[in-house]
Image (tube, rainbow, N blue to C red; front, side, top):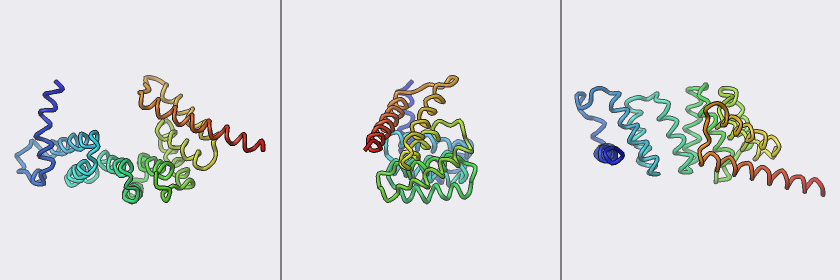
Length: 208
């Protein structure tokens, strides 16, 4: 089944790279939704293989057909952050917040950028904390927001609250049918260790 799927996707990837695909005759697919879903699948494959430029181009083609597609808009923000194109990420996410102030993903992703950007020119503890809290109001049980909040507290120098927030993330992840993947465990353990080191360092400084 896996090999059949891969063989099926090869011609789709070829079509995605061909700008003519966006102007296929109306009867080439059953309806516009079919084309949107094909673009979504192709963009997802590009993202998973870290071909971010192709993923962005494909999401843009999708958005020409369905401009308000939240998943595509969300993924564009994720790709900008992942590829460290921070200014484009800021511009994109701020625009998404402006047109949809109830979409907590945009608040959360922008908060994460301000808390963790490798380019320190984009680090902003105050903005990160404000955006994290605004996202939390909209989605108080989302573990990703609590993880971002933990980073926001960390760069704000409030290491105790950072540790409390990440501990709450683990509690949320374990509730109900929630399962912790290996990647999630690695991320959370890394955060906990970082916060513990900061707390212990602060204690040593206070002793002096």
